[in-house]
Amino acid sequence: MRHLCYAHIKLNAASPAVSFSTGQRETALICLAGRAAISVSGGNLTLAKYDACYIPRGSQVTITSESAELSEFSAEVEGDYPLQMVRYADVQNNKSLHFVTGGAATTRDLNILIGKNVQAGRVMVGFTISDPGNWTSWPPHEHARMLEEMYVYIEMPAPAFGVQFVYTDPNDPDLVTVVREGDAVLMPRGYHPNVSAPGHRIAFLWAMAAHREVEDRQYGVVNIQPEFSGGGSGLEAATK
Image (cartoon, rainbow, N blue to C red):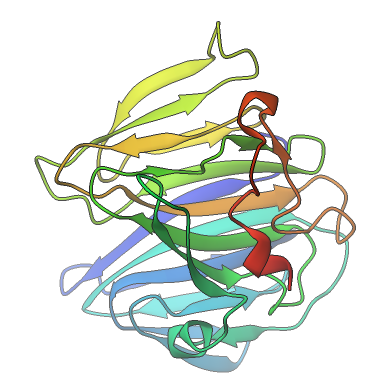
């Protein structure tokens, strides 16, 4: 990966705070459980489940909670962009940020938390939840010229699992692996569909970093695998 970094933050009564500097990296925080107070260079925010915030480079950050889990995605940038808060309730009410897409065996619920709604240089983040037994990222698509990506699998309690594919040549895949809650898969290039086990969903955070700052930061601009290009990408709502 050229740009994108990931960390998982877990706070509890025994370890209720963490502090760090963003340095030259813009940073997106996504709250996955509980509530957390975020102090950013004198500003204060509170995140609840699925809320997100964008933190500029050059910021000093302190996160406090006695019960919270957050995912952190970052990428180096040259530009300066403002501190921004994203409420999940607002995402839910925006049809270009939250929509159900796909068809038979490919239906999934897609949420864009850090996208065109946020001023940023490289990073975009959201999450996808499939219907049980369904495929996501279908039809297979890729966007390696513009964006690198990673998936972090969430809310898939045992015995749930999925199978993740990453490939440029479908006859010689780079990766075919079982994924479970807590796993992460890097996708610097290639098509990247996945499928959930029957009776269970696959759910994951997706995070992308643009290669060219600002210019390549476009969600939904993809190349569909030619063999499956008869319909749309399923991401059209995001570009409206």
